[in-house]
Length: 132
Image 1 (cartoon, rainbow, N blue to C red):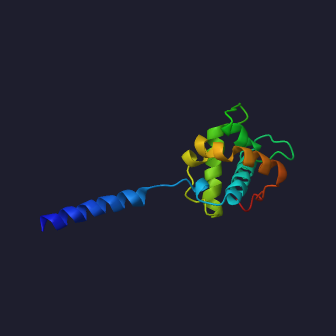
Image 2: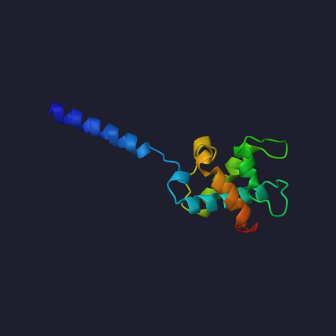
Image 3: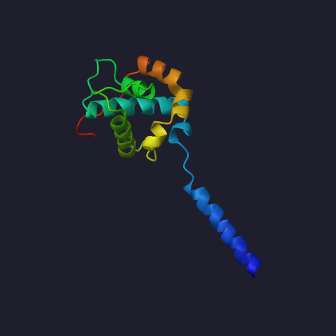
């Protein structure tokens, strides 16, 4: 009886740990979906935060933040928080994204080159004020 109780308690502990494990959503989707999401999230965050952006440069604030550039016009933490808000609102499969996920340097390192190219060759989907 004691053995059964110990085994049950052990299994419960293992299941609890597994249920709490969080995998970065940027690594669980296709590369294309992740790049599209990041571009749209950054562009919409930039728009909401009124970050001064040149006409065809939406999406580059995320790239600049992840490259370590910070300026008075660009608060990277605020940008990351707004990107997470965008993820939660849009229900694009990235609802569980956190600021830690979006600012994870090792994940970004694996996406940086492709993201820069994607941002240069694709237009983001900007939401109207009514949609956000």
